[in-house]
Amino acid sequence: METTTDAPSFARSRRPRRPEDPARIWAPLADLTEAAVAAAGSGTVAITRGFDRNSRQRAKALRELLNQQDVPAIEVTPAPGSDRLLADVDVTAVVNLIGAGSWQPYRVAAQLRAPVLTPKPGDAAAEPVTRDVIALVGDESGKRDVALSHVAVRSEDPAASRLVLTHDGEQLTVAGGWLTVAVQGHELQVQVGGADAAERTITTGEIRVEAFDAPHRLVRDELPIADFEGAVTFTAEPEGLVVRPV
Image (cartoon, rainbow, N blue to C red):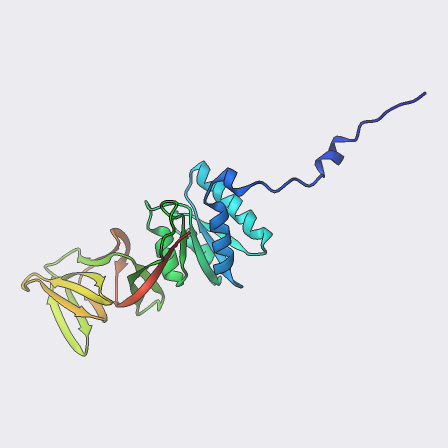
């Protein structure tokens, strides 16, 4: 008696699948992958993504495409502490899958001194863009942080507090002082005032700020990040952010 036997289902499942066309998932993926491979060198690519389904799907696809090219990648999100995944990692490129609505990809790129790759706004080619940033280094921690727009220092008790500013060999003490640091033309623009001091502007490449006698708050790009204690040095970093539309 003749019999026939179908191939087991597990045997069929082992057939290699055809690689999915990146463009079917998201049109910019192919160009972003090519640019990330070129920029990565021997380093790692940081993929910054959001929390929605599309962003997660695109990040997963990009990570798999990079893996096929033997390029390691790490996903990070805007969640507090997520960028700790990049500590002690040689990140040579950052891919922005979040879009223009978040500064996090750009801050990560500037902090790591790596270019950020982002989908170009239209079909035409777009030139890279550079931007000055502000570096922050605390005396106690010695760790460098970055602000893209500005940093502000505010006292919680102006009647009792004072700030001591040191720049270009000069020192200025301001009772009840407050200040805002921005960067323009490769230099810091520091606006400072106090309880009995008129507002003034200081232009310099670097300034050290020390707080005394009352709690202060430090705000970076509208985001309060820490109680301000001890001293912090602010430095202008010309063209510290490089954005490459691809």
